[in-house]
Length: 318
Image (cartoon, rainbow, N blue to C red; front, side, top):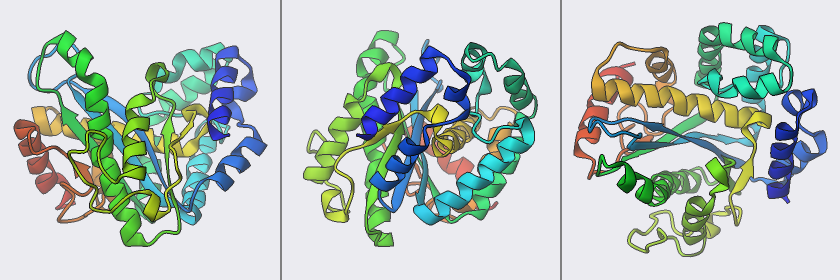
């Protein structure tokens, strides 16, 4: 089972061993490729402080890349070639925020490898986004803002908001698969924080069987995911072993900085420039990115207005 593969990889990382960073088991990788359909959505999550001065992040961001198998192979090889150029290893894990991986590299006694990647991160990010821009794939990112700045309320509502931000994007993925007439489709996610997959599993199961959100309040315009050839469950993998999940993390990380820039109009960052690099790759580009490629609920008035203005100024015109 694919879930067993991802859990085995996770435990090997925790247990140490150089090969747990550099190599994924070849048989496991082949099994994952064979198990998944020809269209895949690799997705990850992030968080952001909004404008309400909340103690903990109150904006959830979720998304990544939709890509067909043939194009995935091209992009993966390009990304791994870039990684090898900068640190000598094509299977070395990367993230938008490389500091998140520092302890992992230290646990494997690979500090120099980490230092090489960290020092060159500005360059390899730009190069990887250049490869994304050249590949036939589409970026899809959803965000949602909590309605309270209270720490406990945000914590209590996090699972509910996680399910909503995921389902808002999953609906668009379903429509994309239907429009592309793909034979089959899959959702591949990084193993969730603290192992809490329930918000994702609940929404996916409802979309697959009933074609609605789990609360039954919203119907999927695409129809049931089962009717579109979707796999009957989400596939969870380990980001450290999946180049494509690492790419999804980069897309979400850059988009997070773009949304932060739209909200607060701070000094532009590399995330803004990388998001502009792949502006043509967002679903709905160039004129319908909002609502198609970057999803913001209509109830989040301030967030919606800020992102709408940012897309119009920086992405639609890119």
